[in-house]
Length: 151
Image (cartoon, rainbow, N blue to C red; front, side, top):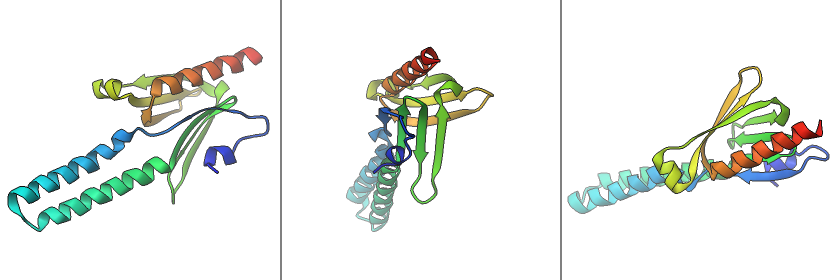
């Protein structure tokens, strides 16, 4: 059971679950391709070391993607990052002022971006490399509006 599911409050419903985009694997793959090209040119043992580093980068990205959760419920936005050391953010919908979306050209083409959640009182949290950030933002803003209308 995921962190989000374990920490739902009574009567709270999960509206949307987000995740990190696969682009986080790109540096590891680029490193592996560079190591392979280096090996083809030099036949050096150094290229095997570089390949091992690339594999470690891919493993790190895999662990990061598997242990990062983004969710919108009917009451709050929940973010959990980390495996051994955990960092969690729960921001009540009525405490969110705005959600800013930042996307590069590559982010628009590949559908990932950074969401910056601004809370009342000046606090903000950046959620980087979010897959399908427009949909996450849309669901969160709709939940904020529904929450305001219920009061």
